[in-house]
Amino acid sequence: MDTPSTTRPADPDRLEHLEQSEEFRRLRSSFRGFAFPVTAGFILWYLLYVLLSSYAPDLMGTKLFGHVNVALVLGLLQFASTFTIAAWYSRYADRRLDPPATAIREGRTAQAPTEPGRAAR
Image (cartoon, rainbow, N blue to C red; front, top):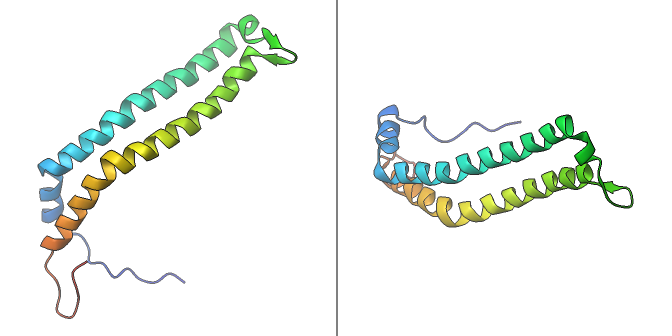
């Protein structure tokens, strides 16, 4: 059984003020500066694989050694690049996104008025 949330609904005016703050804009810009180019690069890399599979079957069927061909190697590299990007993002978020997000969250919590009998979160 789920327990009801103990947090109050967000005040739209305060949220709008938060979204317009310089700290939040820098955080959003930092996230977008990482996420958009990496996502575009990965999509292009995936499309390259699909296009090569469709339009260059002779190239993709080229045997590299034994029963391993170019298509198999590129397909496995798709998985490797996915995990590499996930690890890269995790490291990036730990260093560049989490500290400012925590500071913004703590600053917002410190400014929030408390109800009688309830401590600030």
